[in-house]
Length: 77
Image (cartoon, rainbow, N blue to C red; front, side):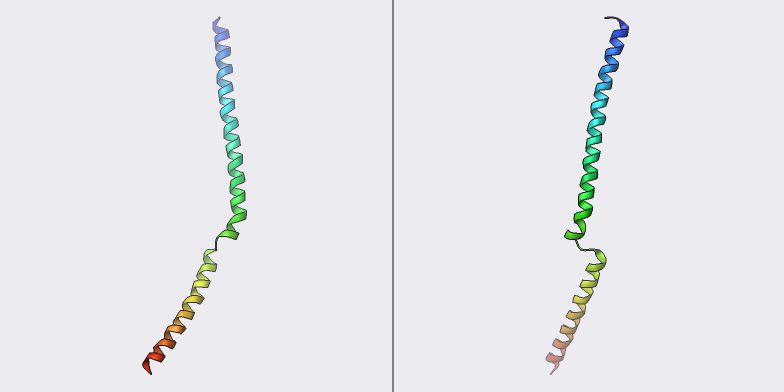
C-alpha cells in the first residue's frame, strides 16, 4: 500500500465519521425543534400566565380581607 492509498483511505474514513456525526447532530437538532414547537403549543394549556395568576390572587385576597373584616365586626359585638 502506497502513501497515496493510505492517505485516501484515511480521508475516506475521516469523512465517513464526520458525515455520521453531522447527520446525528442534524437529527438531534430537528428533534429539539419539534419538541420546542410542541412545548410552545402545550404551554398555555397546562400553565397559568403570571399576569392571570396575579389577578386571581388579588381577587382572592380581597375576598379574604372582606371575610376577615366581617369576622372582626362579629367578634366586637
